[in-house]
Amino acid sequence: MAGHNKWSKVKRLKAVTDSRKGKVFSRISRDITQAAKAGGGDPDANARLRTLLLKAREANMPADNVDRAIKKGTGELPGVTYEDVTYEGYGPGGVAFVVKVTTDNKTRSAQDVRSIFSKHGGNLAATGAVGFQFLHAGQFLVAKDQTTEDRLMEVALDAGADDVITTDEGFEVRCEVTRFDKVLQALDQARIKTASAEIAYIPITTVPVSAAVAASIEKLHDSLDEHDDVQHVFSNEDAP
Image (tube, rainbow, N blue to C red):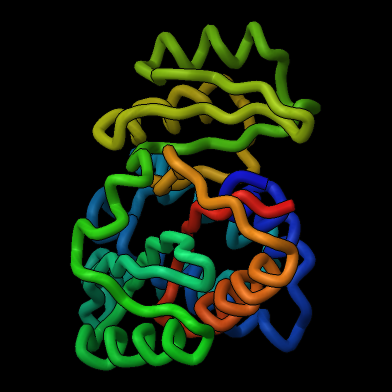
């Protein structure tokens, strides 16, 4: 498995237990607030917000929570001011990690993320230390029952996507970060539903690891995912 398997993570999110729903709702709320802040609160005019609303619906997030998150982003309701921060680090076996955080306290988040890495045999690194090992790009996952390869290529490439990759699990569309919203809007207009749509860090180089190290990396992922401020985690292990 090159990198932390994205399809597996999507499936895990959909199967989240009730005990973790509060954390999932909190993360989706922050994403909605940030999307509404950047592009407005009208989902018809904000493709990223529209996709997050679908994600909220799939997670059975209460409508009141969604409404509040949008209004905090548009300024209709008072709310905490969040900042997006990216941390880089190394996990067990020299595996590179990129951790995206949305927080109201950067100092607290940095201390917490550093502590999690240390506890699991890793360490935070300086900005740029591992970023070169990843492609920073828009990434869309589409299940095979949503469309055909030819149709997806037609829609995505016309919208400015760079590549459409076919895997056993489905299709992956990649594009430049600046074209993310345009490709997302094109897929939405073509009624091609995405299993995941995000600006991601996709491994360019990978680090082979043993089964034992892979298990340690999985524990690090789990600990990071459990932190309320952590939105996304990317890594470049090549696990057996």
